[in-house]
Length: 100
Image (cartoon, rainbow, N blue to C red; front, top):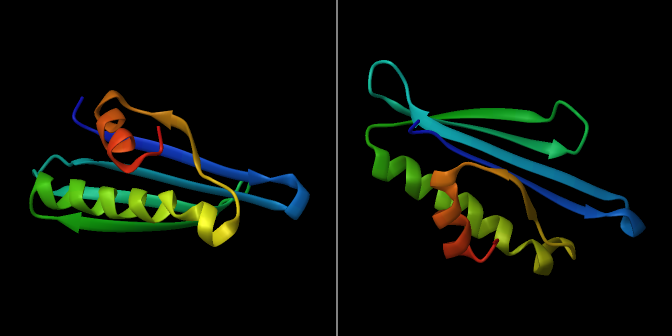
């Protein structure tokens, strides 16, 4: 399977912070690369966004930008994002950004 799946959670019960971020990137039947991003409070439906890319490299760059932003959560939110679920293709991206 060619899909990249990453789900991250940031939890801080003392400050009532429960955040989730999930991305699923892969090629559709027509060869167009898409990334579905879902984010919001853990346990809620959250917000979903869909992005389209012409090539795999652009989709991976988009995912890396999102991961780099999540890596700065300690400075911004006071709590780090931790991987909850990740595909085998996502392990390298998580290691590059310091989330694993």
